[in-house]
Length: 284
Ligand SMILES: [Zn+2]
Image 1 (tube, protein in one colour):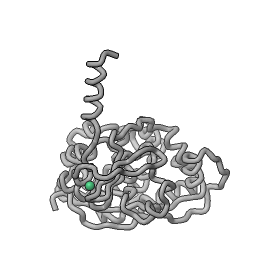
Image 2 (tube, rainbow, N blue to C red):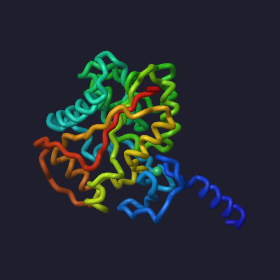
Image 3 (cartoon, rainbow, N blue to C red):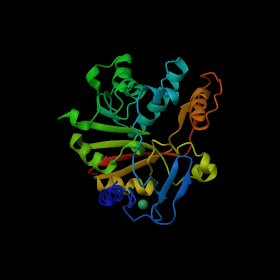
């Protein structure tokens, strides 16, 4: 390759690097940390961790969900998914009949849990298969969109991000665009792996949230800074417990280690591996 175009490419790559904290915008500091899925920069100011090259993972789809044991056709799996999302939704305390958008609706169980609480659900997911899962769960095909632009003039009273924000390539731009789709006083409900938790420090490299598809792990302060720039203020925090089964644990373990362990999809038990839950409100 001629020297000039090589230099140009290097320059373009370096321009794309995320050198300021995606949470509080302070320039990266220190040497960062080494994880199973590569190097992460760290913010000395707020504790957020991020991959300098940003979001790279694109393989969202049926295989992705299956490899993580998220399809949940078994009755216990179904029950565990719905119990988890039901508990999360209740933290936002919004009335039945409200219009709700779930960002990263994946295999559709969050949509079902919202419908059971009486919400009028819409879903957004980059995976094309998410629409098929929603149809299987009794939703109309137009329930699920792949981008905010497809929502046109629709407005929501609640937008939920269950393990979704850490996948979004440009979260600040996304949240700012999202604010055009919100009713006055709308809320955001966020569940994310939290960078500043004891579980991350105790588990070290074994922390289960170090995944190729998670390019950023916000600290509580980092998330609040990001939300503040997009016009949202924290209303309350909660401890998100997930109801899971041995099958879900085993499929995640096999994804990390390559070892397959045959286990039944029961019983259900509650777990938290360092996730944080928060309700934010718009213009409050
Ligand atoms: Zn920061």
